[in-house]
Length: 510
Image 1 (cartoon, rainbow, N blue to C red):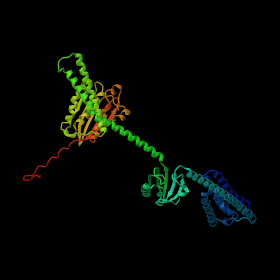
Image 2: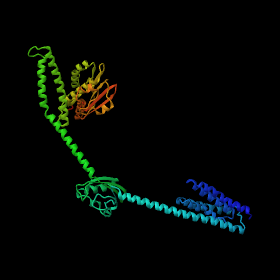
Image 3: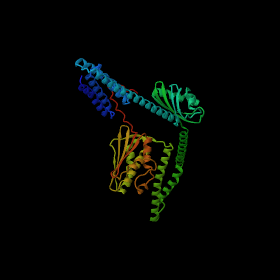
Image 4: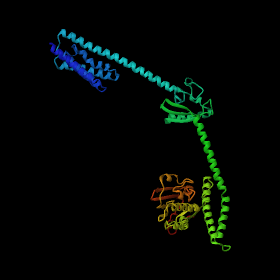
């Protein structure tokens, strides 16, 4: 064989090798480079005698390249490409004639192919071994850091059998024992006897439900508190975290005590006001009664100035009595001493009485007050005074926020057993921030003049009376457009079903 074909065979193997070296600089190009080296080695081998030729060793070039890349995951690809190259050469030998190089040339070609593949494989194996050692060292360092973090983290981490036996322990145990002393012990032995059933139940729930939490007292400190969090890892393994919860328990105890103290003080205030209802109303009723006698001049004439003073005293007393009644009613409700006086009546009559009472106030304010009542009766089983108070408070509140020339509409309607009282106005509306507060005692909205007109109990009493009847109150409002308050209570008495006519000769059952 002449030197020309030999050089061509070398070029067929070396040129793809150089191209593969360029592609191998990137991570994605390494797989492509391995395939190119396999094809180049197969072509060079085919041009120099096939599998028995001097360059047959170049079929192993993909495996050497995969090892040189120091990526163990590329070794299967390198081996597969080498096998494919050998198979390609074998198939080519059966199809194409194979040139055979002279003996002198075959020797140095064999030495070249064996040397290059041997050097490549040796370098790859050395590099792969170095990478493996580096990966192992990094893994050991990572594992050491993780174990150090586990041992020094503030909680106690445990690996448990479902029955509670401790397999692994890391961290700082909130018990009188070192971490190593916990191994192979039953976790329930570390728990105070009174809390062991709860802990064992939590372990069972963790197995069946996947997770569980429980607070317990440790065996060495019955007054202490620990929190146990459980998570199921497998059917035979549970991960557990134990945290010292003494500080949290102390804070919760303080908060409970503070809340109980505040509730006790508030209940005491409510009981005091409820008990003082007679003492507060009696002198005020006397003031209003005597001022009424004076303004009506029942015992003779008096000057106009004194009559005017008597009128002011009576109006102020009536306003003060109204505020006192609201405060006392709210106090009784908060003290759970308010009892509804239920009776059967037509809800339209109670609302009509309020409309007649508020008509004069609406006229003086220049507001059009309208009532929308159904033609048919609305028989209700409720507290008549509470229904009147709801209507009175809603209309009074609407008049306060509606400017002259506006309108307030009171709508009464039934929906099944629901009695609906709806008061809509065309007033200034309520801001969203104020809307969230309204309905709570002593909360008011609007400007200073509007707030000065009451104690902030009107809507809170409406909501409380509605709740006592099993109902609810809702408020809808838009600034500049008006407000609508809706009260719904299940107090209507259903109409009796009409009885079917008896057939002639039939007898009704008693």
